[in-house]
Structures are given as C-alpha cells and as structure tokens.
Length: 74
Length: 253
Image (cartoon, rainbow over all chains, first blue to last red; front, side, top):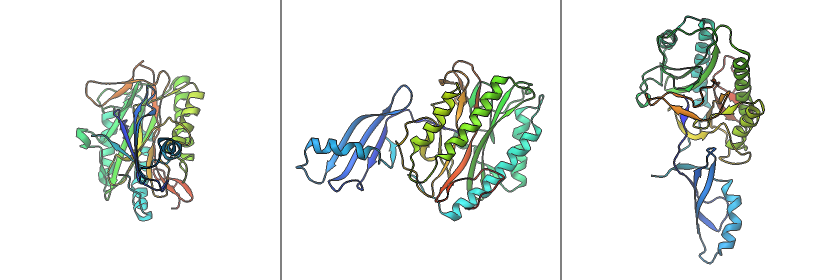
C-alpha cells in the first residue's frame, strides 16, 4: 500500500558522528515543485562557540549527505 | 524512527511475502474480462483466511478493503467495485499480508484481455523500473540512488514517475520510516543499512506525473487521465545484497 508523500517540511536531525566540532545539526528542507527536498534552513550547534560561520559552512556539505534520520515538524 | 530488522524477523516477513506472492499468482490466473474487483477482493479475503493470515490494509486509517484495486488512470488506492473489468483495461492489485504479526506488501498491474501497445509498454517499463530500483538497494548506497535509477530509466522510456506516493519501511506496521521516493538524486538521502526492510513500488504514468485525489479521500488518479501502472516488492537489505521477500522464488537470507 503506497504511502502518501509528506508534503510539509522535513526536519533532518543529525547528532554527532561526522565531526567532533558539532554535537547537533538541524536542517529544514521543503519540497520543490518536483517534490525534491530543498534546503531552507540550517542550525548548527558546535561544541566550541569559537567556531567561525565559515568553518560551519565548510562542514555543511559533508554533513548533509550523512543525515540519517528525519521526522515531521510539529 | 527507523527500525532495523533481525535475520529472524526478516525470515518471518519472508513467510508473509511468499504467501502474498502465491495470492498474486492465483489472481493472475483468474483475471479476465467480465470479472469484478469485488470478486478479487473476496478471493483475497478467503485465500488469506484459509492460510491463517489477515489483510493488514483493512481498517488501516479507515480503509475498508483487503485490496487496493486501481483501474486504468487510477494510480493507487482504488476501491474494489462491482463494475466488470473489460478487455483493454489494466488493473493494479495492491495488498499487505499480516502473517503472525509480520507484514509483506506487494502490488502488481495486470492486463485484462487484449491491451494496447502503449499499455503493454507501460507495464513492461514499470516492472523493469522496479527491478532497476531494487538493484540499487545495497548497503552503503542511498535512498536517492534507488529513485534515480527508476526515474532515469522510466523517463528515458517516455514515461513519468508519480511524486505524491512513495515506498516505505515496513515491519510489524505498514508505513515505517524511511520514505522511498521513486525519483531523486544519486548519492543523496538516507544511507542504506543491513536490516532495513523497504517497499519499492514505482508508479509510472503514460502522461504527466501529476495526480489528483478523488472525493473519497483515498483514490489517486492521473491529473491528465492517462494510464498508470505499478509494481511493488518488499525487500530486505542484507550483506549479500537486496533480497526480495514477496516472491515465490525464495532467496536464502
């Protein structure tokens, strides 16, 4: 029985595993007109508050392909 | 949350899947012009009861039937009905079998009598697309690899891939994580792991991919009225590659 695609925002939650500088990363995606997830917003919570935004950005690409779970936003 | 299954749990799902495959093979023998999808529904109900199984769809979120019976432009979740099938129709029968608490899910599109060349092409490409998707379900690959393989093949054959309905994880419940789109970008999305059990169930249309929902809140049909077909297997991801659970040709686990 086919599952109806969730049309609302997808919420990616990645906890550790990719980099020691991050302990929590949240990525919000929505679906484009072809129903492909498109990134809309990213939160990164580094262990070290001294980490620069540039360093965060550099890590982002690698992390996005490692998202291993998602749940619906409430 | 996504639940990985043990070898023992997958074996139980394989038993449910084998029964489901037997049910489909019986339906294949019976479908002919003049038969109704109500009759198929009654057959499935009786067949499952006779073998100690139940139809998991019945009662799922208010769905009333053991089968989904989707005819011609209906993509999925069509209701069984009293209208006789006629030569030239294609009908997709989708069902979820519960055997001893473990589920298996499989859908097949059937030709009724003589069908057009276009309809035959649709059936052949949809079935091949399913197997191309299954081939990608390997440990270490990603959900996007499955969808990409299906989409590139289907679109290369001039067909479109339905977006609004997707495959899913399955186990003791019908719709588990993750979602399995039949379109996508290679190398993106959830990484596949040993012990995942998924359905791969491409729905392809002769025309546009867009769909609309009937007033009954269940039945999806193509927005442009073109024919739609679907083939579906439940598969387990193992260290030896994907194992199809809903087949008569039982693979070792």
